[in-house]
Image 1 (cartoon, rainbow over the protein chains, first blue to last red):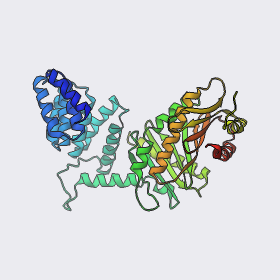
Image 2: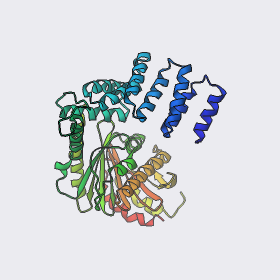
Image 3: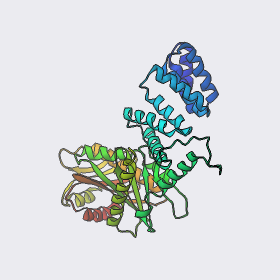
Length: 284
Length: 116
């Protein structure tokens, strides 16, 4: 048992009417103790049936248990209690997306994004939904329906979005010794690939190592009165890596063999940045 | 001003046109080891931020299997931060927009061997 869970449990034992059960339930959920989290949330709701955050917690536990209908009902309750609840709008959008109700999902995610544009998970989900709508021509793609070959329209649209994202920079990069990635604010790969010489895709690892570099670069430039930053480039023994901010929260990265001149790497970076902006902007 | 083992490196870099300051910092904790910066430059903050940037570049390079990081440059509207490191030490240069970055790159990479 983690120190946090022990501390929160003790606090709840001292005062069973406390709202600390929400933090405790969240901590248990986060650490994968879903049965225990569910019990804590249900007991807490017996005392606080009108607390929106408690219903939000229960909804997230249901999602983790793959109980989407129950999660939807809980978030629906949250929105009745607190109509502007961002977490509930995001949650409902997620459930609708999973159910293939893309148009409705887009509406909820758009509302959530308008309220909290800084949340990269909302931006990424909204982008995904909009691209899928594009590939389904705006038609609903119910998860249960099938094209007769076993593939649902939803799965097919998802596959096409994935392929589109994976090949976003392919035209710009050509067959050269270079690769490019588009990362969101959390460092998660939104598009592109990073394949090593031995064929491994290390995009997620590269992205994770760079999470927060946008803020670091902006802080450094701002602190020195250097204005907005436009790129960070570094050279290693075998490659040149260049990155630049894209729109409000994304980052585009290009890596090229050392044999590629630095000036060319920068040009490729600019082209990839424009391509990424257009792709992300087309759906925002 | 006292002389340290980094004085030669720092003066070689601060002599370059457009350079506003030069620092030697610890990549691990962003602490200044030696510095010569113009008045008005918050050296401690620059050291911490530049070390953080360089550390991220190193972690990225490790994740991608790209070997040791050499020269790093942050380009912005009104200037540059350039850096190169060896072991735990990083030489950091702050320069104006018009500074000759290619020349700075050469000097900083030549100087980095003295970072021990």
